[in-house]
Amino acid sequence: MQKIASFTVDHNLLDPGIYVSRRDGDITTYDLRTRKPNCGDYMDNLTMHSVEHLFATFVRNSEIKDNVIYFGPMGCQTGFYLLTKDVPDERVLEITMEILEKIVSYDGEMPGNSAVECGNYRNLNVDAARLECARYLDVLKNRVNDFRYREA
Image (cartoon, rainbow, N blue to C red; front, side, top):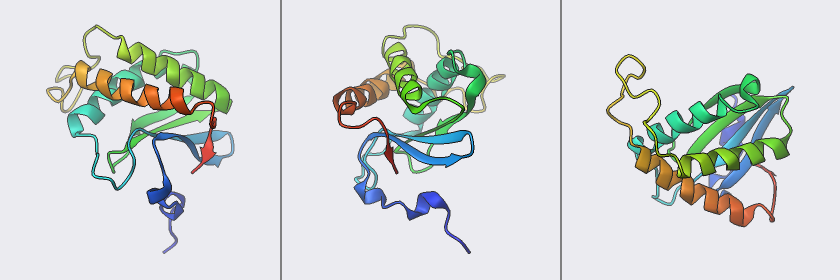
């Protein structure tokens, strides 16, 4: 059986940051790596789920909303995938940082926090999402001059 592309990347070399994971025609998969893989510092499910709800809501209400294919957590609990169509890398980085800033300062109700809207609605916490996004935003702000995107 052929290995999938993401399994050919040495995850021991990945640091928190944003990476182009793959390009499939006009669709780009971004690896929003919030934690260093294989270091024991993983997001708990509450944090992952909470960031997913807020980031997905903000990105699907942003200027690129019609170009967002998917946003969701990595099973390894070290980040998220963002798939977009026809959006320049630089713009994705800018919008990602804008959304992180919005989440860090967000003081409202968690979107999708009812049994009708979510299959695990009790497992959401705005403060957990704010903390994770503040941590990740700090990483991106400090590394943005080092690189825009690195191929993972």
